[in-house]
Image (cartoon, rainbow, N blue to C red):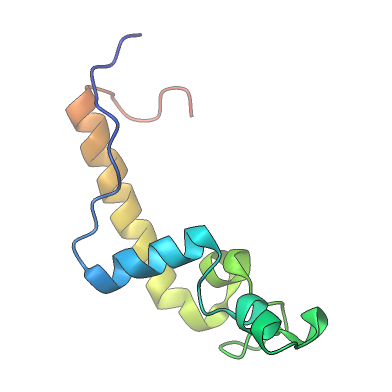
Length: 99
């Protein structure tokens, strides 16, 4: 199949959200997995303080598992779905082919 879509970065209008995304991707987010390193906190003590799961606060926990961010995660999923559907429409892809 030949799709004529051009590669593009995710379009995020909010400067704060763009900065956070770049920090998460670059390992510079102010999560305890990072800040603990700066303060010499043992890795097993870098636990998330936003929820009660007692898990290491790393990018995976922050984006996928933290119960303190359920509403934000739902909003992120909604926006991601809208973006994918828009891109599929622009590319002429009809739904979930191959996924």
